Image (cartoon, rainbow, N blue to C red; front, side, top):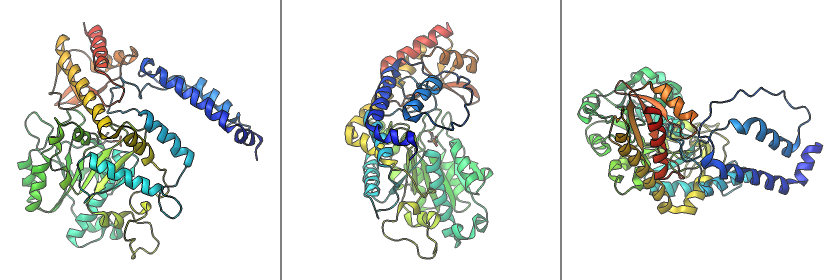
Length: 453
Ligand SMILES: *Cc1c(COP(=O)(O)O)cnc(C)c1O
């Protein structure tokens, strides 16, 4: 054995303690760490020939790389939709690497059963029935991709062809309909050979990002389609009327995929759960977990009612005519073959805090968003562009948006991201971190006021 490797094996408990102490220091300083810093230029180092051992690597990481890392796991990183990692989720993540299970089959480990238990917990959390099965993937983009791949197979079933065997060319025209789809939907369509141009955006309701269901119905009259409904758009967190869309299924043939990447967590807020009425009727559903569940990157779940079609697409057997039956091994369900036990961090957080603990995070984040939205009126030149429907504040300013955002970021106090809403350059502040308090919203107001007045 390489001498450094041998020394690290002997010294493993001490090395883990050193790593633990370092992590504790980092986490302790997180609320006060500059939220986002422009990435410093770090000169690339040559490949080490003889390494430095784990403690040397830790020292080098701490000195060369860690200073440029953002405080994105902290309370005032409000860009995109970004969660942190609850204490229990972090422990679960550490233990994922510790056990290093290849979580795909029950042949040698109960890890797959832990994933199934976690999926069942999540299903209940989001109010889904057990008609839905679920599988872990890396993020909402991959969850959307899997859902749309199953939808593509369903479209083949309608037309008497098997896309997974004959290819997407066998399908002919493919209609994908959505009101205000996330960019990842276009990416998924590109990956799936459907093509970005096949997405037909459907008329929205006035002053909303929710689809006009009557306009959608007009499109559905033209023949079988894949509908991507949105439960929580990134700009204004608008929700399509899922119940009304699902009701159209009695009249028209379509695959209903719902992108509920972070909007699914509205189910935890009694005041907002109604926004998701009808979700269970979807054929496939995307929910991100590294956003509002606050587990570390990367984790999401995808649900579907048609696992048979899912297996047709993703099965990984040489003899392709004998499909796996019963509860298939997990490499028959998603693009990955080998995979980490991604569910463990989610399992830990749910075991530690339960539905109530996670409800408290969601409702506290919503309260913080409302506070920021409410106090914007105090700042001359700032105005809400949409009501605060859930956890995102979308607002405009009488200033150059990129310059203002850069100034906010370099204050170290907060990080927000830009958007364009109804043709207007705008800012978004998205609340989804377990550490965030309403006082953090006040700190954002203070920075904005200082910069804008
Ligand atoms: C974040 C997001 C995605 C993409 O999620 P990733 O985890 O970054 O792949 C897709 N849809 C919606 C609505 C999102 O908010």
